[in-house]
Length: 201
Image (cartoon, rainbow, N blue to C red):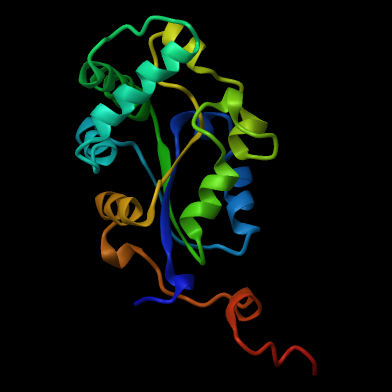
């Protein structure tokens, strides 16, 4: 079993994050926790890659559709689709258009509890309801209501893996093994070493 410090997660800075010139701010937020950036590149995704990415879980379309329908009902609204699969497919179509509209930055971050830490820093899927202090809560004001009205994907700056298995699958879609770097950071001595020594002269 790998040491917890080897846990990896996958992040995409989406087209709106690039256009809002938030690349440095987003990377800075993750980097300051002590996580290590082990892979990074800028790409313009094609539709095939976007579909592969969002359907790494074969149940994703149904699950997203169910969540969307529940969200409409909570707001006292009628969902545009009664069937979760139809709703999920509509969400995927919006995402394909959104994610292929321009360059994105794809990244792999490594460190103890990397998946959970990145998700906590990123904030909830809907920026409107994301906590203050999270990236989405601080830097965007989009909402499901507005994205539905405009028939588009919600502009929430970032994608972050939901769990370790999902991260592994997503990383393999976007990166070759040799693109992921193995190196030491000086700060890892303080974060992970059992004995804190060698600090004093």
